[in-house]
Image 1 (cartoon, one colour):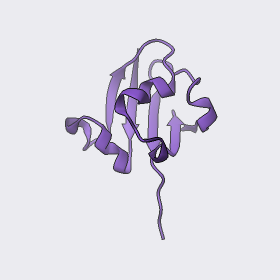
Image 2 (cartoon, one colour; image 1 turned 90 degrees about the vertical axis):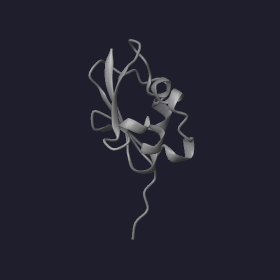
Image 3 (cartoon, one colour; image 1 turned 180 degrees about the vertical axis):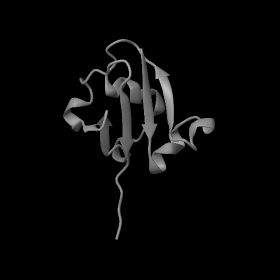
Image 4 (tube, rainbow, N blue to C red; image 1 turned 120 degrees about the horizontal axis):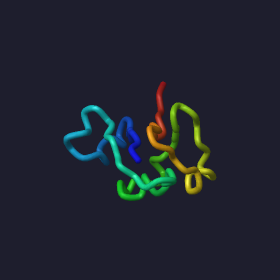
Length: 84
């Protein structure tokens, strides 16, 4: 099945070089793949994975290892952001 994977701000560096500008790529993943399984090949540092959204809905850390994705889902991940 196909999903859209988006990494924002500094996490964009973990995408392939040709996809960094748009901050997203289409991924073919196995049916029922979890958020954690999709993230694993990108080796994102746990301390930088702050806000995880599936189709715009927040997924708490405790659910990321078990929450399955469906075809067409958009998985978006943001690092912690500080501002003033």
